[in-house]
Length: 80
Image 1 (spheres, rainbow, N blue to C red):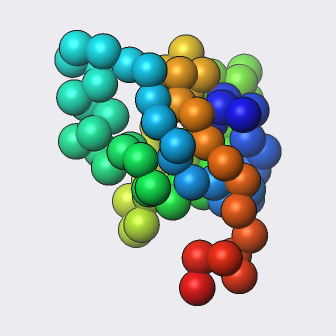
Image 2 (image 1 turned 90 degrees about the vertical axis):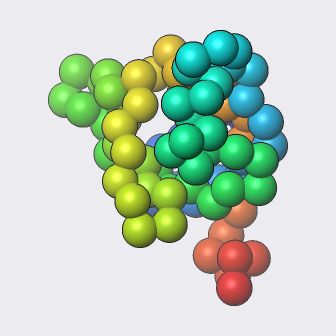
């Protein structure tokens, strides 16, 4: 499953991402790295970009970037 496949209010954990170069560095600077917990907030009206929450930060990503991030769905009970 990729971050692009998540639905609003769904919480996932990053498994890995396939970005390279400057995009990879940007994702890591934003906190999108293995074992990061991400909540999908919403998608823009036309579907691109998406808004995600990492800790207390809200980040917008293009769907093409989100498609390269492998995630695993979790429940809120597993986070605590």
